[in-house]
Length: 517
Image (tube, rainbow, N blue to C red; front, side, top):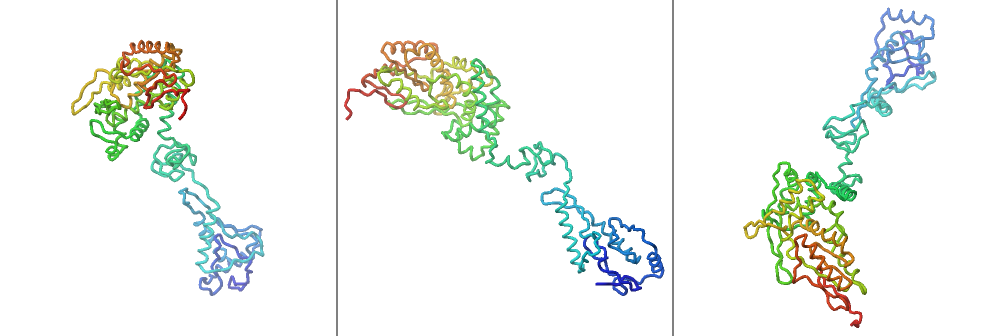
């Protein structure tokens, strides 16, 4: 294909045309074409003079466009060269595009010529098309170039509070990261995933705290712990205590506030209000509601029911103090201790009385233990491990809390109400004195098995049984306790002659001479 370039009819080969940056073809400049104009006489003379000048091997350059020697001839007219320069100048306005990707990262892409003549005279000419086709070609070129050349723009190390982090989450100002590397925080959604393997829950934190307290108590047997009061009122400790109280259910106290009513009003608001109570100094234990439980022998056992709030605080206190005292408790104690049960206590009795040993048992019963234990002795036992005066004052308030029965409140001068969450721990602390003395001084007389205030001593001989009875009474004098004269028994198990009741089970030895029937 050939076309005319000037009025003199000189033919310019199509292969010598110059390609333009976005793949666009220059407008036609032939004589008589709609888009051309008649050259002025001065332009014709100037073009003739330029064609007669010898070529020096140099080429003209536009602002961002280069016309190579292989892509032009010395016979081009001035009007065509001026058109090339104007075309190249207009292309600079589209030479840079700012692209914003879907992730919000600003990028800059420089768009260069889609098709440039590489100096090959035999390069295939570009096919002309409509203006719509040319615009589509330019858009595609820009898109491809922006995909291939993406230059991230440096931003500030910390994202603006409320903006999106590198993972798409909103930033609350608690992240400590730079660039795209972030620790687990508000900008990283993994901290909100419940199945995340490294997610730390409140249960894990409380258990970790308990392990540290137990390890510290074990390293130093004489250590007295201080600053435990703030640990009791920690939000995660209160949350775990509330979960235990909620799981155990139970009746309401004197304030008639039930677990269901607290859940209906909102557990979070309940815990938030409870955690702020010690800071304001407003916590005051309420009286316990007395409830009578019938016994198998026809009697009644008094039971004190604290309020739900007091049960939560007592459970939180137990979570903090139990690991400390657990280290000091002896193996002969099985009641209300982690990892120990009534079944283990019964198994210990079976092992100590198997075969020809353990034929004599002291089945002991403490007279009104929960109502007669001495508070001063109890507090002195607690002070051996705890020196925080606020914790000691908290325990003392529970001991002094009155008993509400039939709308009338009564103050108790001794003992602790049976039924409180903290009562089993305080009972074990009080009676651990018996465990310590028996383990150190009387272990040769028999095996002591205790479940809170119920205990038995398994002896091999009748003489050891009598001595065990005497030693227990001596220890109880220091604890200001008494054995119940009617309920404390000396039992002979040999040949299945007698048996005894312990933890709701009847225990006796089988007569070896008896024929199984």
